[in-house]
Image (tube, rainbow, N blue to C red):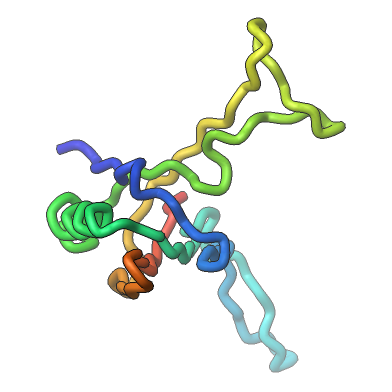
Length: 140
């Protein structure tokens, strides 16, 4: 069984809906001084990501099919392009793009292994657009 790929044509997150929580591997242990102290509980943890996708009616139907059929209503992992990095050019220390031998910018390829988060996707309709608020867990 292969891991589903999030449909590229749906990956149009709005900047205002994006939120990322860094994975927290700490637990707080009590000490003799009655002050809790952070202790590392794991070496790797998932990152929580919130996205809002701005979709047409057809794209919203495609998203619903991906959620229901390809990820088993959010129970199966999938891969998706990292919308914060994938496709952006690599740069030098002074901000200029790195170029290949042909003079084209070298682009970043970044992918996430994901699961849908605790809450199911939520829908909002604004005019003729369909917005899906999506909670993701990006796995280490």
